[in-house]
Image (cartoon, rainbow, N blue to C red; front, side):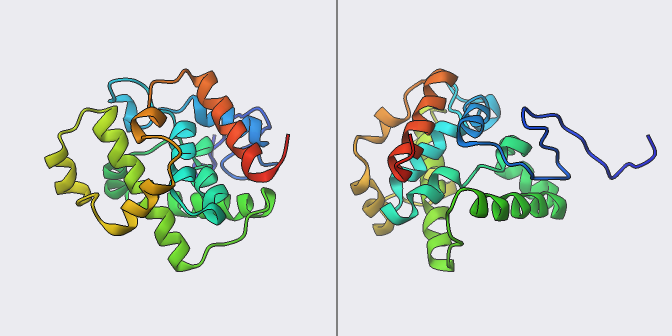
Length: 195
């Protein structure tokens, strides 16, 4: 093979890293994300990207919930690359791929682009979800978490907690990939009215 820039990866919809057309359906996306572990597998039990995404969608304001559900949709291509590795790679190509997929996701799933304040809220929800996953499923001591993430008593985090329909520990229990896939699909249906 002579073209070293070309990367090919086979998916159910023949999606490659060079193309985001056609995008996976919600059920295909849920299937993929439910089988991708967060924390590079170093949790006490698996927490999937699908499960994390449902949790994030419950933390943000209702008008941002669909964004919360789909915020890591690009990981159906990239997998979940942990933050320290992302920082070490400092990969412009990875950022380009995420941006390309996110732009296509906005068009395909009928969500609008977010303004800076909404992006900040979504990022805070994503970080808080990671904090809770680390506390509950990775058994990281709270003192260490507070050192890396900051104190969760921050008022915007408390507002997110008030939105949760159940304690975070219930939402982050061990689920099979099938249960995580179904939770993702049900959350999408609840947010969009699609059945």
